[in-house]
Length: 194
Image 1 (cartoon, helix red, strand yellow):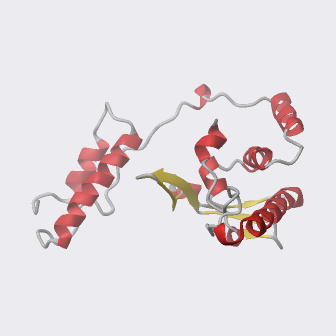
Image 2 (cartoon, helix red, strand yellow):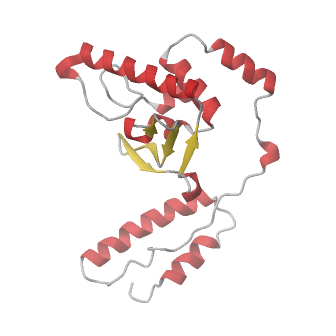
Image 3 (cartoon, helix red, strand yellow):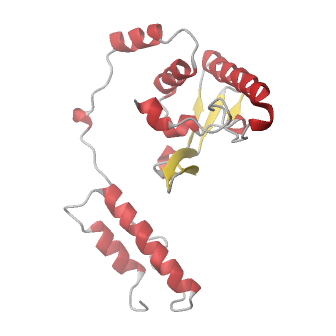
């Protein structure tokens, strides 16, 4: 263990031609857990995974299937009646946020005075629970300037949230999220995907 250095981990994680970048990231997470345990037990002084880079996924942008202008206009039209799902779809379309990013938005992430949305977390699922995680990449952490119509959509969702909270009373689970289920828990992003 003592012989393994950061450069060894990085070399291993960056030179895996048959693996995707996301798989290399998962391998790094597992290795980091092992090395963290070794640090805790006093076998080594430093976790060699700390700061080690890993292979990144590359994407062929030409293979992405984007909505046309006409499809976008149609989607906006068919989702104009308020439902939480319609609101989520419209906000995803109009802000460019990922589903996990949008569902992790809290009231503290919105600047109502300057019409800004701070994106610095995403909703993730592991070990049978939902939790807040960092955004997918460092460049995904950003601030989005939006118009007042989009801010009004968030305000409407917050009003609906307060109605749910009043309805559930003691059964309400405070998650802090703007988008919630009837009992206050986070919205299941898999259901939004479907």
